Image (cartoon, rainbow, N blue to C red):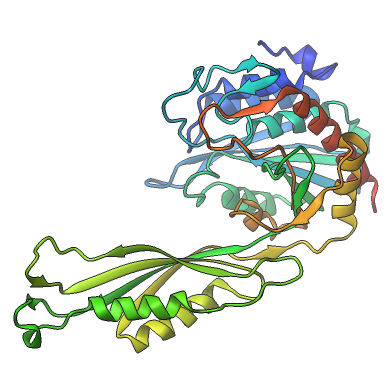
Length: 385
């Protein structure tokens, strides 16, 4: 369906906006066409659209977009945030993943849920929001599903340099579990991956006294790590958990004691910990077993304490969708882990049942409702002082 500037300005068809975005192939890192489409949707609404690329190979360059429509001097600033990149569609779709198709009231296409549908609803919301209501911006990256090194982080730096820090930020990740509006996210657990290595000495299995087998030490180390109780959780966070995600012993021979054994663990942690603190804790355990540990932090845990902002979001959901939204911190990481350094941030979007799956789809009716919820959130957030 072709989206004209006039239709966007008068009666925004959110499904049509979503179709236009889905029709732009944008496997991460996204660039070009999908940003052209979004710019074409925002510019007629009075937004100044800024696009730039950041980073170098192998994780860049990444295209990013910041758009702003300024309200009266001194007015509050609400940012809508999200990403236009998608994961690879894979094989076996009923219809082509980048040829949006409505079947049985569902709009199918890669990105329908995660998260082009939500971005379309954001555009639909601000199309019906008068500029006098306050300042509204869009923080959109092309690399949330990828390495995420030169996407939202680069946007935050760009915004700070130009004094564009918002008062509040709403991220359109698909947070709803069973029906639209049943869950919002006010925080996320942090994530850290830790690589472990135990060095030994190779030798013939028939002469173990002439070798040093690292495998038993690695097994003992992993056993101790698997038994760690990091915490019991908090009122808003589930317990932190450590999972063994890889064990590697590069040894094709059956009669050789290997010289090295390696493993990787992944920890999802709540706000009782820091990534660095957990790396140090694992390293201490590793040292007792003669192993080394190297960690990489994907993001720290964060929490936007329930209060005025979450109340605005929940009230809007209740009015437009008739649902009492649960406040949650479950799930994986998102770009909210970076945006929380700018201002209070909450995530709310479509049902996540089909995200990253074959035949990803969103209910057309949900898109319209989500646009109304977003508009109501924007009105209330900008009016609050």
